[in-house]
Length: 158
Picture 1 (spheres, rainbow, N blue to C red):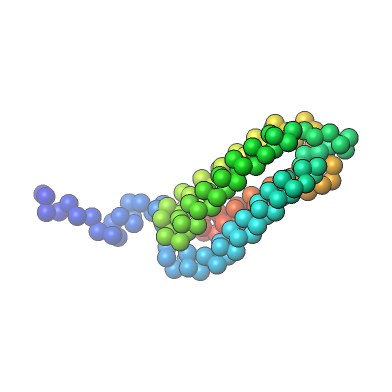
Picture 2: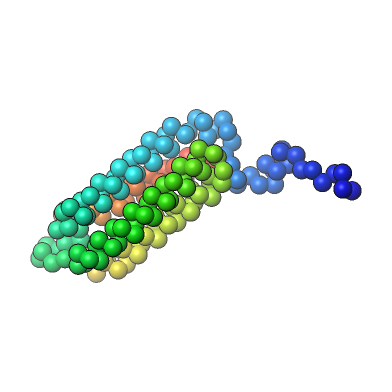
């Protein structure tokens, strides 16, 4: 009985299909995924620069009232940038090693959706009709990376 405890690689792949994407398929979609990841990081970086350097465009209403004070915005940006750096590192490592890439992709989607939804719920829904055009553009800079992550998810799940 003890001699037959070895599980072959094929059996492990059959038991845990969620751990990795097939190597040939991942090699064919990896360039698209990496391009989207770079675009997502650039968009988030641009948004972080806009929020820190031009706070008047971040959640400002037509009446020029800030929905958040400067200290709150600074602490939120610092926390979110650290989350982006950590999440990006895990996502790219998972993509490179093809280790739990499907699960990491789903986790990234859930986290980004939760962050966007919390912002929508706390700040935007109450004052969506009063937001200025630059503030609405900043909201769009939150939704575009989400759409790109959804495209990555759809490519991986095919």
